[in-house]
Length: 125
Image 1 (cartoon, rainbow, N blue to C red):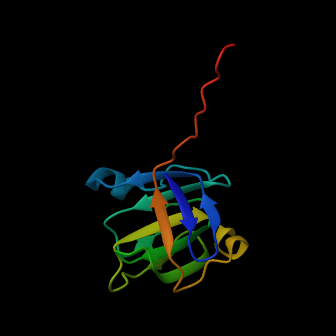
Image 2 (cartoon, rainbow, N blue to C red):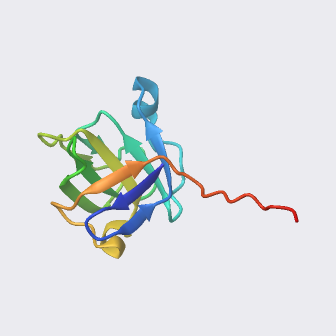
């Protein structure tokens, strides 16, 4: 998936995995050593997250059902808890520093869409 800040037109991540089962939500980013630029994890449904057992900091966005940012955490360190936010439909986890670099703020709208690659067939002449 691709995460785009629709408010300012910035692509926040172009390789977003989805955690939408009990098992994938429970595992999240545990066991990873980091997130590369452009990577992310969309956890849905989800209202809050923790970084207990993680080895690296992350940026966190809580989005409502319309994709509006209702909570924003920059550089959430390992072994921290972000309590559930009322109205959150899902949480987007990104590499630390992404939110500031993309200018993403509370009230912005974020779109998560399936990556579509433009394809233009070559015509032999």
